[in-house]
Length: 318
Image (cartoon, rainbow, N blue to C red):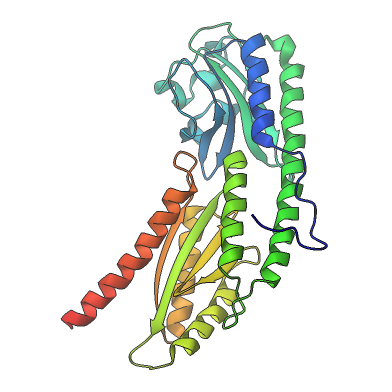
């Protein structure tokens, strides 16, 4: 357990988006029955079922479909009403590609907004039967629930910032002597902290593992190589990234970063290391709601070690 540091922000705020979402869904299921009620997350072109219970479609939590094919994207764009007891009566909804995958004959939705006013997700209700769920006259109630979840989300964002500051304080006491980067204890705290946040919000997150060695053409001591690698990490990575020395390799946690952006950052980091006459072996993977973060952590580590093994084999052959 991480000790509370003197002067650290209070990170024990009673804010939990997932718990609030489950309570909202419990109310909607009891009072406005539909085949499917979910709190969904919109990110990287997908609409993910962030909080979801039993449903008529057999869809699993963490599942998703393309945001562009959804009815919700049309609702957010004001192409139709937030409550449509008969989807066929709304041309934009009737034409949604998602209806080719599952039967949707009634729809209810209300956006959940992030702190910058962007769409974080949607309270989404669908039914295989018409006239199921709230009536159009009950739209203010659905919007009230969406607004309340938006308020809880703002609290989560404040909590996340407080936790980030607390982690910086912890890192100041856990510096690797050779590189000045965070050490194992800070890395463990960061992964645990982000795991808890990911479980609640599914914000895009990537993990990168990196090992380095001297380029045989430009021999250098292992300490010099490690120091230069740490310099490259500081140059390339965004400010809110957590970079740590973990024994004979480095770990990087990229918050609010899609897998595509994470791969681009990893490629930029490897290029910079090559410029510094260092051979780099890297692995990067994005956390996925359907699997949890530890699958991605294993994937990234295996990529790094496989990259190193291939290099060793190539050197032996040549």
